[in-house]
Structure formats: structure tokens, C-alpha cells
Length: 181
Image (cartoon, rainbow, N blue to C red):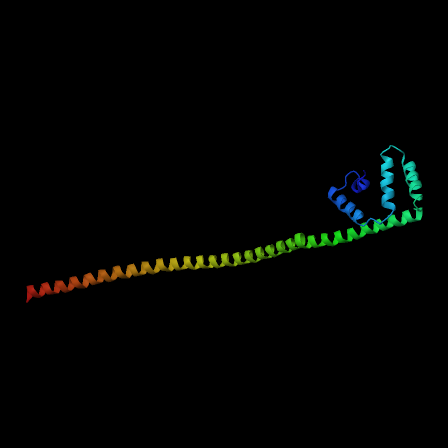
């Protein structure tokens, strides 16, 4: 038996899509002998290695015995085209929805993350500038501390030297008092 899928198969077609479209045709098959049954009859005759013209004429001759006209055949072929066009519209809507969910939303996420990265870079630069300022303040403070410590050490040394000298003078005076008085 000739399957609906085999009626429309061709080299390089996507199997899943062909299966989906074939099922749509089967679901919407009109009652009686029409384009769909005619196409099956032509395909069955093609399996007998008859030329295409003979297959079409033989299938039509048989179909004509049940009242099928060329006009009805063309009209019902148009009906099945419309069925497939409606399937494509639904597919396009579903595809657009999937695109929104899986592509557009991810693109928006990527943009949001890139924007966040830029904000962080600005913040990092601000913090680096702040750190550089603090390091400069530290260098200045360390220089000041060193200078002040040196001043204090000098002051301490001078005070201790002077203090010792004054004490020695007092001690010398006391010694002189004992000796001379």
C-alpha cells in the first residue's frame, strides 16, 4: 500500500515535517474519490513501471467512472493546498512563539548581562581610582609619619641630651657645695 507520506516524499525533505504534513492531509481527507485518492492511484500505477502520462490517464479513467471530473480533481487539489497553507500558518505562529521564548528572550538576557558587565566595569574603574587615591594618601601619610618620627626622635634626643646636661650641672653644683661650703 502507498502511504500518504510516500506520496509526497522527495530527496532531501525533512522526515518529521513530511510526517506532520501527511498527517494533516489524512486528517482532512474529504469523503469520496478526490485528488487525494487520485494521487494514490497514480502512485500505485507508477509502481508498475508505467510512464507518467499513462498513470495519470489510467487513474483518471477509473476515477471518472465514479463521477470525478477534471474540475473536481483540480478543486480538491486546491482544498488540500489550503489545508497545508493553514498548517503552515499554525507552524509559523508556533515557530514565532518558540523564537520569542528561545531566541529573543535569550538575546534580551545577553543584552541585560552585557549592560551589567559594562556597569560593573565602570564601578571597577571607579573603585580602582578610589584605591589609587587611597594609595597616594597612604604614601603621603607614610612620608609625613617618617618625617614626624624623625623630628620627634631628634627632639627626644636633644631633650635627653639637654636634660642629662642640666642634671650633670646640678650634680656638679651639689658636689661643689659640699666641697666649698
